[in-house]
Image (cartoon, rainbow, N blue to C red; front, top):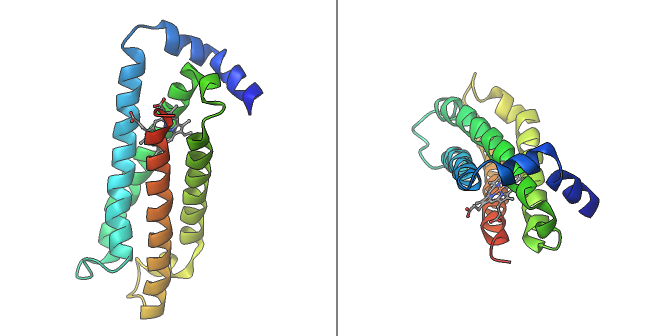
Length: 161
Ligand code: HEM
């Protein structure tokens, strides 16, 4: 891990983050938080719906609004996060919260892939789901909330180590 962090810190991106003005890190951090807020805000609404809240609103109506917001927020968080990491990458080498955050993000993404591959998710836009199918989607929603809350908590704690 350390060689990669050292390479990232010495990359053009690392130099640009450190040498392009005193406000750069703060602004990129703000962008990171806006990305995280968009991701989690959208995920929270979708996961609560998957868990059975707001049953009167069709799942397709909620998923069509929240999925693009979550995907955009995630992309912004990843791009800005890499910039933040590049600023002082080697200082994070022994930080345990980094090793909680990235696996949590990876599991969150695997859960998204599994959800997208499930028959219930594929069918939810074209027909009413059975109670068994709704339960399966609720499980995906629970795992999703756990992963993203863990990633956010660990991300917040990184700076306090
Ligand atoms: C490749 C992806 C990502 C990288 C490399 C990354 C990296 C970082 C870094 C270096 C920090 C600053 C830590 C510090 O010194 O205080 C940070 C903060 C944070 N990250 Fe990420 N991050 C990524 C994606 C995400 C995602 C997807 C989430 C949400 C699920 C997230 C949530 C947070 C939070 C909540 C903070 C604390 C911000 C603050 O308190 O100012 N990050 N991230």
